[in-house]
Length: 232
Image (tube, rainbow, N blue to C red; front, top):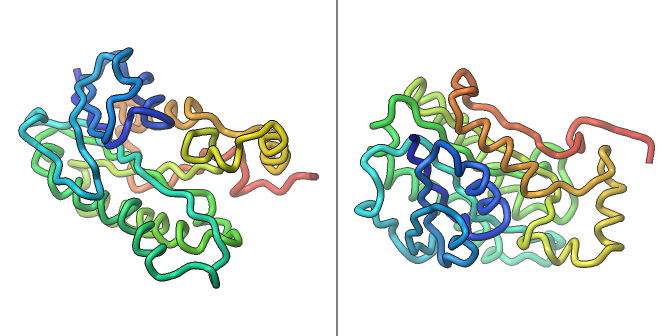
């Protein structure tokens, strides 16, 4: 049985990953709330990435997998963004992630080969209007992941999933009506909005031994949005 730690996992993509990993993993979910987790066989650790230090006494000595799920979708014109918005996005998306990894690094290196899965966005590769703040913080994750993967190879594998818009509570304001969902689907080459399960299946693969020769990669699970130009 592998020991897998999810930072955030009570809803959305994190919750879908927790469900996907039920077989073959001891799952630890560190999050602000244990909402929805009662139906899963997981160990919950109360934790707020913005205000608290992770309590490692509640974790096993060996951690085989880490998934960092907290994130933001802060879409506004650049001229309307104050520096505080950039700092807040950088804090939740990147700096808190760095702090978590530094905290549990001994646990990760104690594994024969551990796997870290992080999240970016399709907007880092494509360049989209109103995405300056979130793209800056998510772009930091992509560069960080490759450097960390190089530094700790072959002991720790590090990979990034970069989705397009996915139907999660975080994206609710962009998908809170049938009309919005339809418009978002039509903009995607696959003519659908991604689901938490779409992302969870890739995360599960990257955490498993089936991907033990994959590290330092950015996976665009985005319906082809980052690479395909189709007839609209």
